[in-house]
Image (cartoon, rainbow, N blue to C red; front, side):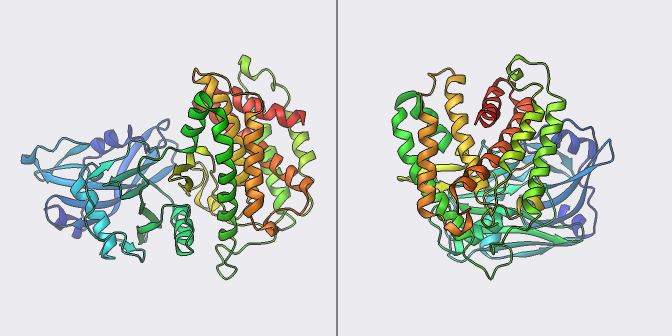
Amino acid sequence: MIAERIRAGDLDLLDEERLIEFVRPQRWFGSKSEELIRAHVLDAATLRQTPPLLVAALAEMRFQPGTHELYQLLLGFRSVGEEWADDVIGETDGFTAYDALADPVLARELVRLMARSATLEAGEGIFEFRAVAGGMLDGDLGDARRSDAEQSNTSVIFGDRLILKAYRRLEAGLNPELEMLRFLTERGFDNIPPLGGFYAYVGRPLNATLGIVQEYVPGAPDGWALALDALQNDPGSFPPRVRRLGQVTGSMHTILAADASDPAFAPEEPSQEALPLLVATVDEEIEQLFIDLPDLPVLEPVRGRGEEVRERLRQISNVGPAGRMIRHHGDYHLGQVLWADGDWVILDFEGEPARSLAERRRKRSPLRDVAGMLRSFAYAASAAELAGGAPAPDGWETQAREEFLAGYSETVDRTLIPSSQDAIDRLLSLFELEKAVYELRYELNHRPDWLGIPVAGILRLLEE
């Protein structure tokens, strides 16, 4: 029996080749360009003892250069006679092994484990399930269906009431999304879906957050879809809503800086090295990026201008007092906010997925979030035409920027940002340049048809 084998320390439940074949094409597997040569389970626990069985496992993926990554596998086991066919991995001991999040019974089991704050032993550690006060996880969960919107994680929606997000690639440490949602939920911030529960692994391989459950917001368009729809049908309808988005953003930053007794969130005065280190990091990214720019017509306006971009970086980095450093969203753009019941709701506090957990938890100027949203307005204005629609009206992006900044200024704790408008403008330009360089690299690798958007952003900063 599977459960007995796991209790005995036998983790060779799955054929390695079949496991590699299963993992490699998954949307949440982030290293498709690497040669995956080994896949094996480091630790596991049986979370449900009666059929269908539910097993949580930590699996190590090894690659040809000698590197490795850790992933969370949630495995379901049903009798071969049931002829289960969804997301099958293989067969073992008369059972069909498959991805448990394809099974509504097992997806609901994860939430029920959180509701009763279960702790389950594995070979090298424990799996902890915890509910956040409030009873959100109690009662009928309703139908369960997987979301098809995720890339690096897997989400399951329960009856348009709750959503479970399981983190697939694991790093040691507390996931910033759990940390931020718990902090904001406990302080009554209304513009997030509240946190209902979470689960984690604590053991010898690592301590890691495995997943969260929060309130689900059904039928709400995200800011990106709302902006593109407005640009096609009623351009003037969007900028007034952006002022409210600025207010919500300022309130979020103020609350994130409100607890001086919590070391993870207490605002800090920037060290003398903080800004020079940031500038040096961006400078190195610019240098590396411009060395290898491919020969594409869309890149002609910036080709060979790497030194100009670096000089512009040095000019705008003379900020003076730069406000305070706080926890922030870290990956803030129109796709991370929903328009629901006449107000904005903020999602996805994981931070930029390409950065390490330590980097994503680092305190930075709140203006970094502001710059991310400003860059998102530029993307929306350009994407409307790229998607085959009409170009954005003249001044649309400028109006959106002005409305957002005005709303932000109304609600943010002013001690968090520079005292002079010139210093605010310089710091925003620095973060917008950092974001535009990141975007240029991303589009080179993923969407070359969109390269014109970050190119235009870099040009605008050069011409200011």
